[in-house]
Image (tube, rainbow, N blue to C red; front, side, top):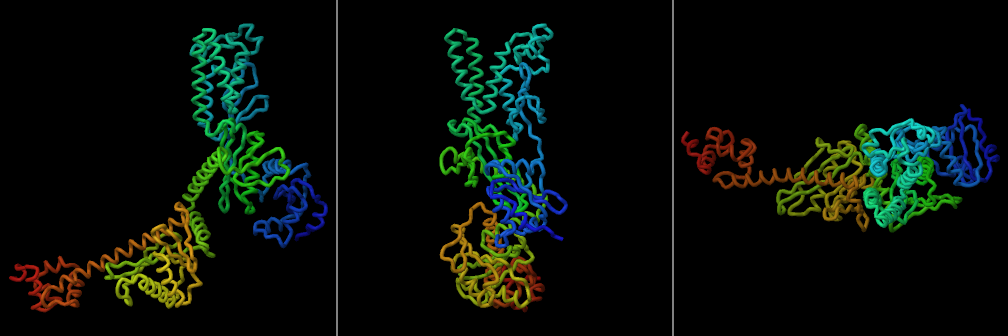
Length: 605
């Protein structure tokens, strides 16, 4: 029994920014949210005039207690919400689907620090950079560091005291030139630390700074006539410059920004993150979010931004996003929605990544669950074609004739977006003379649905007419005559520009050429054309053969049709003997046929 009085609870909630928590009757935390005005936001859940979805109504029905935490600004609420969701993972909050443990590059907290990768973070004062969603990218960076900077890989305790006592000897790595031998004091700690500082700049995307310093050192070495050292610096410079040319995608004036984009489906959303330093992308990752309460794209993106910035320890003052983010107190952060220029290129790149990730994930899921793809496709078609029900049953009409002769109509049927060939039908046109495509369409549609109504069949949700406004108008006449024009959606598709016409609309609808909805309609149209043409050719060929037989003395149209029906082809008629022919025609007609085809052997027999 619900004993919770939300009106009393609301009185204790202040008009301040903060985070609210909903608890159920088992004292379990079921939802966490943020607000710039706690009382107004929480009140909206219980306001009957508010248009809330069914899932939110279920959540509200389970609330038995409300607690809250006040903070100074909405940005603080935003950050606190994210940390609390990660900690408690309430049932009705968006679920971040990311079960991978990503690797980090570690600069070990020790004398003569080692640099390597790890998936385990230990709070020992070491510097961790990452995480790296792309393992290959991480290995490329480590490979560059190894090739450019000789560092130790051993785990010896290289304290100054141990080195001075001569406890260690150089190993094979020193002989190979991969280490400068700090264990025997062949390399000073200051020189080693200078390399570490340069590596930190590289990992933070500040390659330009390192290149400028290398250029200055090269010039000084040449001035001092130290050509061997200058050559080594040049080799290092070329390696870093080549790496930078592969990494830079925008103007280096873009020094420190975060870029986010989102692509959402009915139940899932996907968010891509790019970290850009000095024109170079140094981090990128895409995550999947499972919706719980039909959250908006703005709510999902806000949550993902907080998660990524926490995960990558980002403090960028500018965030590039595809639409405005409503954080009134975000004075320390600038949200940018670029329209043109280098920042727009970055946003487009992020969008390409998130769309690719979304398609890959959906394809994987739909291969395992084909019915999910069908439902998604039909839902998309319903939205694109402005329907009020899923088009599970679609029928498409097409006409064929040859210079006004042999007119036929064909209908193909798709069920759940797939051909249902057992339901295909074709019509011999009965009431139309001459090449009148409009009248032919009117007859075919009327005959199809009159019979369907007479037999109590289920009408399709969508009818597609192969043709423009003329053919569509003819089809609508028949539907109105049968009284079903309001019960089905009917559209026409014109071949030239693939326009879709609706009854009564002056202008056609143009769908994206890559849209799945248009591809299904094109498949329907092409299948109807193929099926109609096949039937039309059979009829035309049969008509041509009948005409040829009529050239024989004593053979009329009716007799010619009887012969074709019995023998199936002119070739078999040509090869038939007189007794065989007399199964269909009389003796005089049989002799005439044998004489016409020059079958003297059969005649002699």
